[in-house]
Length: 238
Image (cartoon, rainbow, N blue to C red; front, top):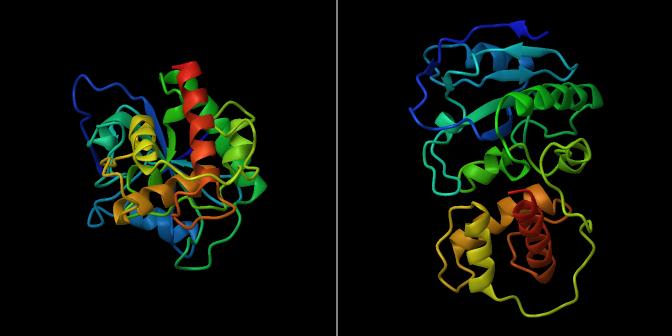
């Protein structure tokens, strides 16, 4: 059972919006205790529904029926109020600013158990189990390239490319098609036909989630091939 640690930082969800996203974060703070304090500080105006420390202890901060303040300014599949449609889970990890490290097995086991319960309660499809960096690619990099998305996918939580991330044959990438495919999957991206800065930012976010071995923002053939795999998997379960 989660440890109750109520946060005052929440509000009403927008009416008519189903809970159909699960957004995963890292805390980006030096300790779980510091993160808990901030998430429960009314002056911080930030929260999540749950926090999981590195030992696997789960803290419930905000009831699931309430709108926690975890996603901030972001967008997914045209929805700009991600908080109204999502459950947010914070994972204690120092993040890129304070010594980013692997997520311990006990923490990921606890996350998987919690996520299965959440997915049983809410109509959240696999392609809407997301990282903070997916919904806010220009602002956020969490939970980052060390997060074990592949391991969660083996337990039915989220998507992972069925063919792995083996290198694709070298071929020119149709940038406009790649942009359209990223936007169709959910990323906020305008199809300009050019590998411009917004495109590189979104490509890096996609790579951080689905091709973490190399996160460089380059729209290369491997990235395009992985995106096609993910899009097919999402379509198959839609």
